[in-house]
Length: 281
Image (cartoon, rainbow, N blue to C red; front, side, top):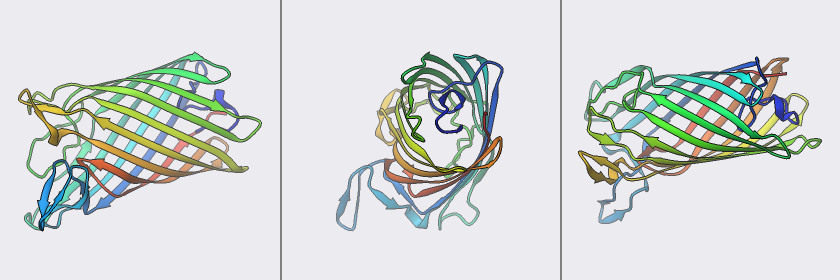
C-alpha cells in the first residue's frame, strides 16, 4: 500500500512501480480453528447437511496454521512490473484418533508475476500474468496438509484501480481465472478457479489508513484418475478489515483479520494478519 491519493506510487493492485523502483513486504498469518466447510453432503443425528455447511471437524479435529510470506516487486519500465512471492508454512490437523498428529513445515510453492499497465487515467487498468511453480516439497500422507500443492497454476487477472484524490479514498477490483494443472503424484486435477477481490480504503488521519477487503474464490469440480470428484471442489469467501499504520517514512505496518463468510472444502474461522512493507515515496 502506498500513500493514498498518489496512485502512481502504489505497488499493490492495478498500480505498477515506476521504472527502476522496488517494493518489498513480509506478511505473517496465523489461524486456529476446530471447524471447516463440508466438502460433501452428510447426515448426522438424522439431519442432512449440504456441502458448504460449517461443521466441527470429526473426532475433535483441530487445524492450526502459521505462514510467513516474503514478496517483492521491481519496475522494469513504468508500465511493466515483475514480482515474486515465496511462502513458509507450519501447519497441522490434529484429532483424538492421533496421539502424535502429522505436521508439516517448510517453504511452499514459488509464485511469479508480470503486470502490464494498459490504462493510466481516469482509472488504472492492468493485466496481470502469474504462475505458481511446485517448488515446495509435496507429501501425500493421511492427515497431513502439505506445504506444496504439487502442481502448476497459471493466472490471468484484470486489475482495476481508481484514486478519488483530493479525497483520501481509493477503490480496487481484481477479477481473474486460474488454470490449475494436474498433480501427477495423485493423478488429481484440483479444478480451475475464478477469483474476485474488491477493496475500498481511505486515510483516516495523517499516519493511519483503513481498508475493507472482500476476497472470493470459486473452483470448478476437480477430477481424480480422470473422473469428476466434487470433494476436490474448493470455495471460500473472506472479508478483511485492514488497518495500515505509516510507522516510518518508508515503511507500513498492516494489521488485519480475515473472517471467513462461507466456503466449501476449506478451514473455517478467522485469520490474523500482520504485514510489514517498504512503501514507495
